[in-house]
Image 1 (tube, rainbow, N blue to C red):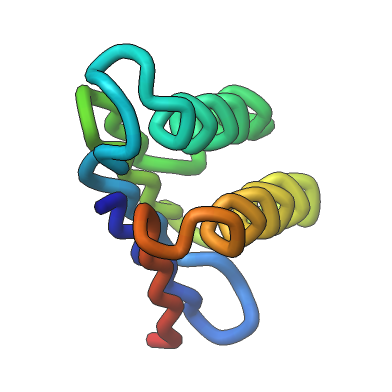
Image 2 (cartoon, rainbow, N blue to C red; image 1 turned 30 degrees about the horizontal axis):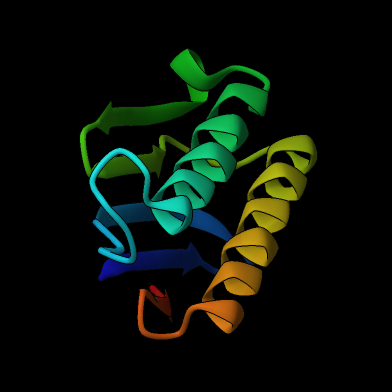
Length: 104
C-alpha cells in the first residue's frame, strides 16, 4: 500500500510524504505505482524554486517534500493539484492508497 501523509500549517501546505508500493501489478509494471510516481514527481518539477523553498527527497518508494517557509500561491496551486490527483487515484484504488491529512 502507498501511504500518503499531508500536513498543513495554518491554511498553507507544510509537508508531504509518499511512501510504499501499491502492489497492484508486477514490479516495474504496476500502473498504480506509475501513476502516483508520475503525478508526484511531476508536481515536484513544477514548483517555482524547489531548491530554495523546499527540502525534497526522491528515492525508490519514497518522496518527501517539506516547505522551508511560507509557500507561494503558485506552489500552493501545484500542491493542491497534486493532492486532487492523488485523491482521484485513491478513489479508483482504495486498497492501494491511503491518504491522511493533518493540521499542525
